[in-house]
Image (cartoon, rainbow, N blue to C red):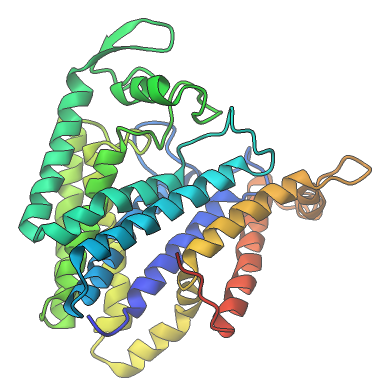
Amino acid sequence: MSKRLLSLDAFRGFTVAAMLLVNNPGDWGHLYGPLEHAPWDGWTFTDWIFPFFVFISGISMTISLGRLAAQGANRQVLLTRTVRRGLTIIAIGIALNLFPHFNFHTVRIPGVLQRLGLCTVLTAPLVLYFGWRGQLAWIVGLLGAYAVAMLNATVPDATGVMHTGSLVKGEDLGAFIDRTLLGGHLWVQAKTWDPEGLLSTLPAVASQLFGVLAGHWLASKREPMEKAMWLLVAGLALLWIGQVGDAWLMPINKNLWTPSFSVFMAGWACIVFGVFYWLLDAMPLPLLREKAARLLKPCVVFGMNALFIFALSGLIARILGLVKFESGETLKGLLWAPIRDSGLAPVNASLVYAIGFVLAMYVIAWFMWKKRWFVKV
């Protein structure tokens, strides 16, 4: 595909903006339900974000690797380059976890960027050496193998009590593997399990392969309107399959990245991206397409420097909590206080602070976009 997909940039930017919104409330104790993760089983708007990033990465891999392969690039060279990119993303994620204390003895090794990078490394050979049928087979195989292992393995929990096929926090096979291999380097709020653990990366790879398949469809010679229509149809079908899996196999669960979660969120990704694609790339009426492009320009601006904004926002959020004045008040507290005391309901004040954070990051993203500064790894 020689033409850059405006819809993919907008979809990526929408996901980045959503991530900024849910990660930076004024008060974690006052949140609207959709702006926090489901406690365990189930899903909310917030649970869209991570699988959307993984799905987008899959689409991007298909488009970029396909373009380079068409230009005659060697597959081994492409594999090496893509693996290097994945390892760089992992390194950035670990560096963010190390900041600001750089305590290597307790640093959390897993993380969002670490999983994105690991998925890139594991998916790269499947993109380069398999066609869409082989990739579909890998999706089925990865989800099936994960389900069989999780539902049949007998492992001890953190206290030594044995469980077979348990999907309770800290009692599953994935948690056992993480405790065994990563020890004290897990999510500090859980300690005995990690939402971005090693074993659950396998169904996350399947999520990325769903994006790869969507990329194949976008690269086909079908008419744009047909592509948009079938993205929506495929999304509805995947939502239904995910709900069936939730009822009959394993519940929809983001922390375990269950097969039903992987399929269900791929369905939502197809639908949401399908809407962006229809509005920005497939719309047959030029005037409406141009109007949609103007309205969605902020999403495009965010999407052009997504990884940089992702990392920078994490650094800024931590710095806001670290910088203290003589009164003991943090910089975040200083910014939050007038909003908190404005008379708004606590949940609305918390949301206003989060929106302000998004707008501040947009100013940075817009400045970079205006200067044509695009950070890539």
